[in-house]
Image (cartoon, rainbow, N blue to C red; front, top):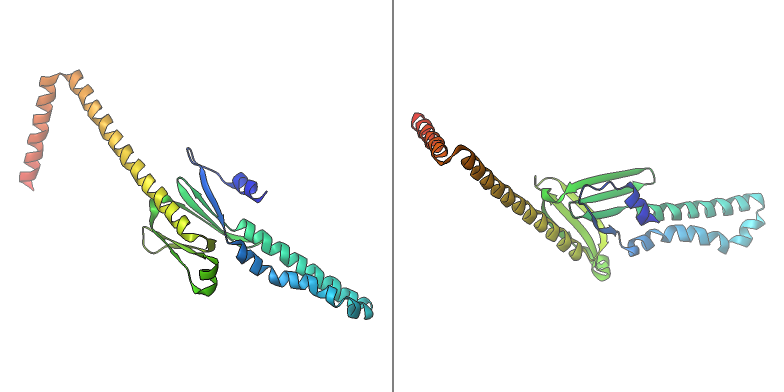
Length: 214
């Protein structure tokens, strides 16, 4: 359901496809659910003492239960909406900071300078999760995605897609050069070889004159 919602709100370019959708580790979600679960369970442990206070006890029981449930739903929604999307043309970081607040970073693969990951502390080392850092060409802007599983695979994927984008760009440049050669041949055929050579000589003479003047 969450995945379908992401695809529904994501506007893809021509020939663009989603390669991978990454969320924070489920262990991070489990850690964030500890407090809400305690708030939900705690009133039941004190059910008899609370109800012995009459309406006040029932009110405390109800409020604690409602707060726990709302906090549980909030953490699950934020975890589900906080996503890192990799396509064959760009990366999209959706940093969901609350139910009504999010920051979206949209970065073309061609603008990525470097990608590296960090594993910090005992907890990340034991759980094999880490943080991905994406550096842009200006060497100033950095996108950080925290607590994702197997960060080295995400790093390799982005770098490979970046390399493929660069290769496609070179292939496109070569194709344009070939088209240019074909265009020159057509112009030569249309003008005739003698007229074409005269134009080339005139262009060369003008170029030499400009060099001498400078």
